[in-house]
Amino acid sequence: MHDELDIIREVGSIAASHGSIALSEILGKKIYLTIPSVDMVSCSGVSNKIDVERMGIAVICRITTGIQGQAVFILDEKNAFKMINISTRINEEDKRSSVMTEMGLSTIKEIGNIVISSYLNAIGMILKKVVLSLPPTLISGTIDEILNIILASSVMNDSALLVEAMFEESEEKMKGGFYLVLSQEAASDIRAACKRMLEEIEKG
Image (cartoon, rainbow, N blue to C red; front, side, top):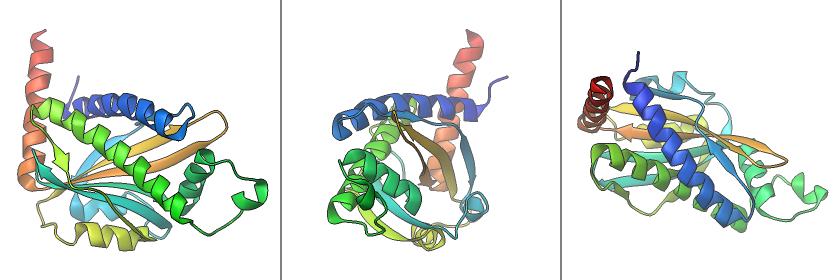
């Protein structure tokens, strides 16, 4: 029996396929992006789903057309350094460095923008709308601080679509998170679009 989250997972698979191609071109290495899990929760319940004590880096884009909300890509500090390491040729001593360079931050921003754009394009396909966002903003801090900034403008009935993102290349695996913070209306529109698709599937 299919449900609405199954459709959203399929959207994630489409986004991952497009994102893999774009990331491979940007980084100059074969990158596989997969979406192992998807969940939709109230904004107030987001912090219960992840480890908020870790340090992290987030790429945030405010959505301007199609739906109302924000798109956020988050890497904890460990996975952010892994991502930067595969994108540059560095020696073992540099790999142990705990200092994030300007080039490293630019790489994270570009990767986050690719993941966000791929997912918003896929969401636009099921809504049959053009979903666009403003240029990305980069912030860092504890995951808790980042979430507080992201959710500061949300209200009680707003929802968050939580998408786990896994990046793999020949020698390394990285884990990140994609969060779509949605107004009540936007969440309802996505659920309604998924419901219509399920009905079409059931009709055969």
